[in-house]
Image 1 (cartoon, rainbow, N blue to C red):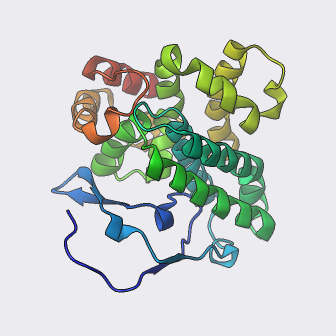
Image 2 (image 1 turned 180 degrees about the vertical axis):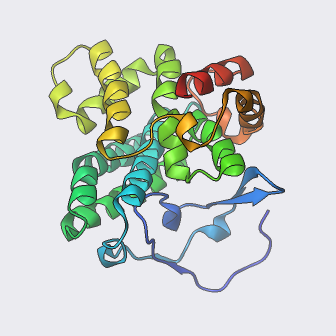
Image 3 (image 1 turned 90 degrees about the vertical axis):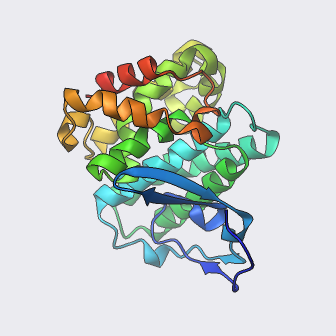
Length: 260
């Protein structure tokens, strides 16, 4: 809990990813490896400035990972079990349109300021979306990867994202079907099931297209580590309650196995 008042606060993000410039959430590592969230209105700034010039020197790998992180924020806000609402849905859809339409350009042509600006705006809108409708199992399973193996947060999300989406499909197919054509316009006109699966497949292909690692084994995770990761993921109750499908230890373990 944050106590007391604070000085005036102005935030200017240097990556298009977390959206933390407009959220009341901060993540800290406690002890040796566990990540926990601090949630307080005092963390909301008085002003947020989005300046594309602060992001044009980002390496493609960082641009890709943080961009995927922002897309996850929008997707998880759109399917959040308890607080999903009309406003968060509108923010999430617009965020995904901006992010999905510009992440490739931002990675391939890093000096494209229009693309960089749209990525920053998309990241901010996604931050506003999940500040209203919190994120869920993708983040819960990603946090232990960062805590134990120091995998960058955006990459951690990308590594587990398609597998969590597959797990959620029985409860989230309709929502995924609504989001899919926003990110992948070629899915327009397909059936709901085809659109939903197209979202999963498209996001699974996006990582390697952007040059990202795609398997847990590539970041130092072995099969022996998976029970520990699953145990730590289940501690993220603040996030797991928002998942559209109930997450269990056994399910988390299978997701890590699929991602290995």
